Image (tube, rainbow, N blue to C red; front, side, top):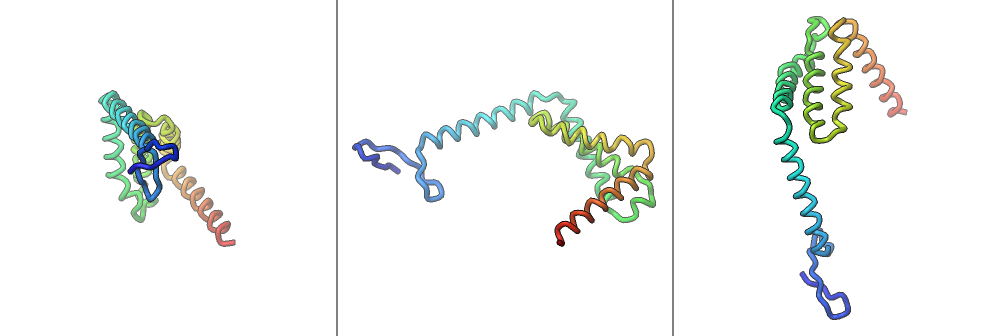
Length: 145
């Protein structure tokens, strides 16, 4: 669509959502998106096979242990589902950190929280569960007021 800017020359506009936007802005936005896609693809192919392998291992750990973790009777069995889920989440976040550096924080947190579970599973799990229940109770009391 073309618009008249008042001095006789014509400018092209694109109508997006009912609003006229100059074509140059649409082209600039398209170039930025294209550049971002190319950058992410290059990063994906430049990441070593080791990182892709660790991401796959993390997905397998999550799939294999999440159902058991969410199931009932976890505390009686003393399984390693929580440990494996945290390690799997840490591996996936480490892989994502190759694209976006801020994913290192959840990766380090997940592995940091998982580390004490190796030493004393039942005691640490009980402490984690108690802390989570207290946090949920505080949020519930705050929202109910």
